[in-house]
Structures are given as structure tokens and as C-alpha cells.
Image 1 (tube, rainbow, N blue to C red):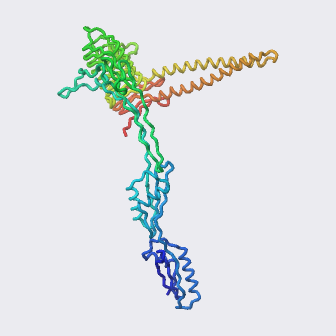
Image 2: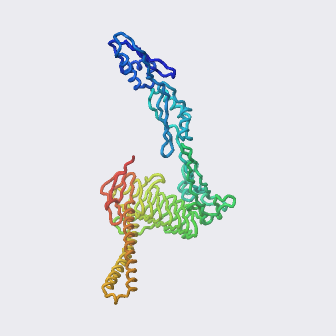
Image 3: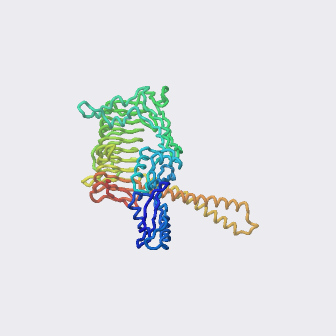
Length: 561
């Protein structure tokens, strides 16, 4: 019987040694593989070619032998100890590097140091972590021989862009103060106590510029530096009544006693007129600057200021006009009247509040209000509102106030917790003011188009008429001038057509951007108007967004996710 054995050779690899004896038994490739599988060398690399060669030579030796006769020994290296191998891949953006390890076949495992060296030879120089290298080496040593193990070995660092310079306010504005009133010792708040903090003195610091930062550099795994973008710089703006501090050019200080007001990237200080109440004993107030009224403005009184107007109490059937903001600690109260079904031209409210800036109040009823944006904290009812931007009913954080009846013109959006009323009183919200203005501009464009189009047609007829005349009767200079003028107006027609198309698209984009948002409930009888399109709610809705789309007004539920 032929004997087959596995023997370690001088290279520390394994030979298949065959002692040929001719009999009925047969050594095959399968029996050799079984021998290897049952040996201590089963994890080594198998050279199948040499196994085939050994079997072929064995059969050649056995063929001429007589039964039970032995032949010469046959020896082939069929098993090889192979060390673990590694290949390194660097991503296209060079922000990570990955190692692919083929585990050892009876040879040496890769150490963390060996993985590191291979990566460095492949061009990876930064972003290694010792823990990751050790983890990958340990995993490769545990996996079955010849397995493929992949793992990230280095990671780049993205550059962190710098922060923009910004302005830090060092004093409260009137709006901040009135909307965050002074706490009493018993825990309640005193809405009438505005405190001296609103008024600044000469030399008081108002605002400070926080410098931009350059950012933090990053790197790729190949060692290339990634430069961050520095933050954008801004200039500290010294408005009226302020100046840059001579001691610190990053600080803005007051040059007079007055009311601080936030402007873009800075502050200004208005001269301040301060009074307890405005009533028949004080008369109307008209002031170049800002006005602070600690108490109330009584019925029939008028307060006009070029700056802000700040009121600690309430406004009752009075008129306020401000060049800045108006902040009212309590509410606006007009005389109750029947406004249902009345034309706007026939409704005369007793409370008139207008500001070029924003208006803040706790509540409002039977008032006419116009401003840039309006926030009423609790409730507004039966009022006529004209805001360039947004009407907000609720706290700063959430639109949870009530909008009950009235006529609202808004330029951007209307937000409230509840819109409308159970009694079915009309709540009309129109976004047509800006649409109408845009349509007037469109009419101007169409007029220009008609003028140039008519002129172009007139010139073309003149050119055609001249061209039909005999050559000797045509003035070449006149013809050239007519053709040139015709081309000018024809080109203008093309430009104006493009302008018209872009403006019509602008109108549609604006109409689709405006909306009403009721975060809790929208009642029957709430009407939305957008240009020539309008619709009215005919039932009660839950949280709802009302907007214009594809020539229709839509009432869509607000789904909180």
C-alpha cells in the first residue's frame, strides 16, 4: 500500500512524501486533500498543481511495478506558509484610507505597526488612531486563514470654517424691556415699571463687536492641508447719538442721554421725552426723538414721534404715529362698533396706531393698525390691519393667540393659534395689496411694450415702402437710418417681452408664497384673498395652512411630524 505523509522541509513549508507500493489501493487528489484537512497544516496555502504533479508521477512509477513491489520515493512541496498580506486604498477625496487584509495562511500575522508601515508606504501620513490599528490587527489574527478583512485605518479632518463677526448688545432695547417686564418680589410682574435701564447715559457702552474667527485647518490622510474659510466681517455702525469708544474700537458708546434703538450692525440713541400719562392735562405729544410713557394714553389723545414710542400701560381710542417701533405693555382698546357687512370706507375706528417699524402689544380690539410687522401676544378682534410683512398672534416662540374677525392686509403671512370665531363673524385676510402694486408695474411694462411694438411696426412699413421705390429715388442714408432705428426698437421689443415674462413669473411666485397659518383651529367664515382669487372656509378646521396654488385657494391640514 502506498504511504502518503506530510513532512516539513528546510524552508519550513510542507512536502507531500509518497512511498509507492503497487496494490489495489489508490492515492488520489481527494485523499491527499483529506490528509491535509486532518493534519496540523490545514491552514497553509495549498499548491494544487504540485498535488496533481505528485499523483501523476506516482501513477507513472507504479505502472511498471509488479504487485506488492515498491518504487522510488516521490516528494513535492504541496503546502506553503504564507504571511498575511495587505493593500491600502485611498478615497478620491483623500479623506479616508482603508486597509484590505488577507489573513495569514500558517505564516505571520500583521501587527498594528506593520499595518501602519504599509499605509505610510502607500502615501497615508495623517489621521491614524492607535486604537483602530490595534483593533484591525487583532481582528485579522482571529479570523480564519485566508479571510479578507477590511477596515478604515485613517480619517482626514474637515476644515472648520470661521465664525462671522457679530454684534453683542450691551443694553436692552425698549421692545426687549417692555416684553420682559420687571419681576416683583411676590413673583408677579409690573407691566408699568420699565425701569431706568431703557435710558442710557453719555458714555454708556451700547454694543460690542465680536471678532470673526479664522476657523480650524483640516487635513487629508495624505497630509495635504485643508484651509478653512474665515468668517465674514462686519463693520460696527455708529448711528445717531453714538460713537466708537476711543478706548476700544470694538465698542459703541452713547453720546447723549436717550433711548437705545437697534439698527443694522449697531445702535442709535434717540433723544427721549418721558412722561407718566398722556391725557387732557398733558395735551398731545409731538417729539423729534423717542417717547416713553410710563402709564396710559387716554381717549382722544395723539402722540407723534420720529423715533420709537414705548407705553407701559394701554392705549384707549388714541392716535399714535412713530418713525420707529411702537411697544405697548398692555393693549389697544377702541370703541366697540358694528363692523359686520360694512364697507371699509365706512368704518372709522377710534384707535389709530401706525409705525414705520414694528408694533408690539398684548391685545387689540376695534383698532386700525399699520406697520412693518405686528405681534399681538394674546388676542386681536374686530380690527383693521395693514402690515407690510407678517401678522403674528402669540408669544415670540409660538403663534398661539386668537385672531377674531376684522380685515387684515398682509404682505407675507398671518399666524395665530385660532383664526375666526364661532359666531361666524367675518375674518378677511387679503394679500392683494402687493399683487395690485405688481400688476400696476406690469401695466407699465405692457405700455412700454406697446409703444416700442407700434414704433417698430411703423418703421418696418416705412423701410418696406422705401425698398419698393426705384433705386435712383431712394436716399441710401435715410434707408440706412430707418433700418438702424427699426432694429433698435425691434430689439427693445424682445427685451421688454423677456422683462414682462420674468415679472409675470415673479407675481406668480409671490402669490404662491403667502399663507395663513392657524396652529390650533380655523373657524367657518375665514376668507383669504390673493389677487383676483379668493375663497372662504365653510366649516371648522383643525390646525390648517391656507394658501394659493394653481389658481385656487387651498385649506390644508398641518401635520406635525
